[in-house]
Image (cartoon, rainbow, N blue to C red; front, side):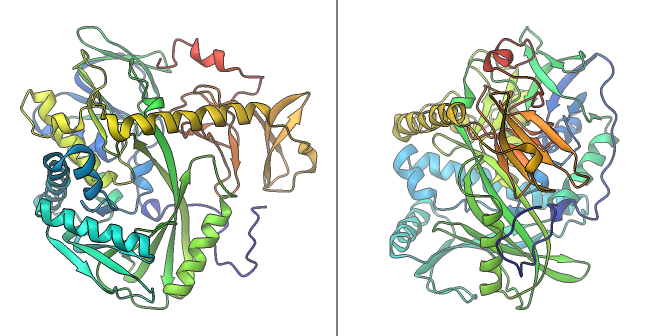
Length: 525
């Protein structure tokens, strides 16, 4: 069973995203032939779908490949805030990348927000789009000072907003900072509509089709695990973590960060606005309407994937916060999500490698993918059409700022090495036969580290715990019943199937070694 220390908990047994509940998603076939197109897009989240919609509108022949089902990744597990208020970021950006670049980041995300608003209006998309003010608040003296500095950054960058001394919740705050005229929506309702518009323009989508590599000739070719090929003028990698890294070692330049979400019926009425805490652990909340009833989304408890405390404790902490602040009648859904953080906290959008202008990537949205993902699609459109875009240099993946990028590069890769060594040295005395129903654990079998899970029927599922990305050892996530990699964030079902990359192959049943993947022709290296 999933262990929950709170006997009176309202938490549902299973995880499910509110954004995917009661939704009818279109079904698409798997790729079963070789194709030649103008653009092949890998990944059917907000970046891939928006890019497909934009490029099809330009009359291009576009194909989208999705390894799973459309909108089953990060875009289907978001908080769905459309905002340029991305935590406390602008004071840091001014110090590290300069005032003009900081302003450019704000403008790029504001243009993305405006594009979504205009698209919703143009196509009369029923997706609960509403304009909201975004507020970040502090509960400690340390972050009170940081919010004051952020407010000064707003003034320097001419961002509409200002300091507040209270918010309309039962939370004792030190201060808060509002950014005016931001927005929220129902992302899957919006994106399902864009998919249909794309199909109506002659676009094609293929699900359950895993892209594994790229041949970088004059016209690049995407190779799939089904041994099919798609040759195109451009390849857009919109897969959260790049399915193909070229020579730029993106694994070493980002880390995966998880967070948790609850959708609850609250006893107290939710006021207008979207809110997030500056302090750790993060608390982010907004409301939605479900069948005419108000539902509150409570999000937070971020940590590096595969590292930290028992994951069920994060759900318990959000439940406790929700009860204290809103009063809980019912918890309808619980789910988790993760995103990638770059060395300098700016997304990587553009040429995957200098000299490969036909292969473009978008990654590292730092949990702000609704605006950043849309900004990426708008930039991709201009790059494919050969148009100048003022944000291209800002997001260029080959950039490298000495501060803080160099320090972060060393810190993050020291962490990866530490996790790699730690996993190899760990052993377990757990006997897989002694596991309870619904329990998973790392076990030792014949001297080898294995992962075991006992399902509801009492059947044992045994996998090798060596991640098929670069060979780190996965850890059991009891809150979501998955195997998570602490190095680069790959996630696998309890049967070993890939849920989230960068890994492309399932966990193996035999004694898998790091070299097995690095020498594979389908590894993406």
